[in-house]
Image (cartoon, rainbow, N blue to C red):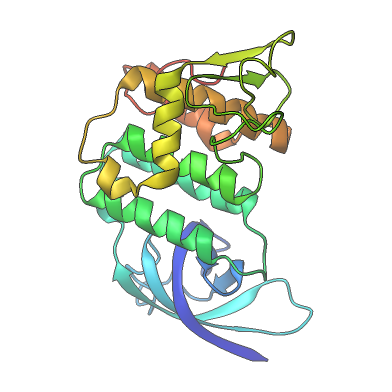
Amino acid sequence: MKIHDTEALLLDVFDLDDRDRLVTFLTREQGKKKGVAKGARTKHSRFAGQLQPLAKVRIHWAEKAGRELARINSVELVRPAHRLQEGLEGILLGAYLADHMVELVQEDEPGDLYFRLLDSTLEALLSGADPDLAARYFETWALRLAGIFPPPDDCPGCGGTLLEGAVLPTHGEALLCPQCGQGGAGKKIGPEVMRLLFAFGRMRLAALARQPADPRLLRQIEAINGQVRRAFLQKELRSYTVLRRTLAEVGGAEVGGSDGGE
């Protein structure tokens, strides 16, 4: 039996039965893991108040060879996440961020870059960053770390610059310069969008959040990321569909509030 003690970000927490909870968490060293917190639903559980989705924790767990689920022995809060869950938008956005990690991060493989991305995004949100900007920044980098969406620096076809505009082919996962993208159906992307995507790759979210971002540009980036994500996964994330539908029903909040999934 291997014993582990490390920092983690809690992705999902589900009731497993009348006494236990199933926890999916993200670690730097071993990527995504799943474990059972036995007795977590009982009245005087040692896990009381600790299993907050998207919380940063110190987690102690044990795993046996051949067993799919680890046994979680203790969880200690490092950074609570309850302020992110105070409103409907925060709950939906949190589920959307976590869903990317569940889909893209592998189990038992190093997950340091994903951990740093999610950790810094949550930290920025807790510090008051615009949720719409944070969502677009996060999904852009999540796709990039997965090797799906390369940096918007140079055209993979000719090596030319993309800062003056680009084309995303209908069934493609990479941006092309207008010349290489000529003659094929695709989404035309203007220079303002490309410059913001370029800034995403060069600046931290906390720095970007100091200046308000144009919602029009964020909507276009949402559409680009959505197309690339669906092409790779061959499906849409359920959390994104729920987020867009729910916020539209309650008045069209900014995160996913327009038809960015076309």
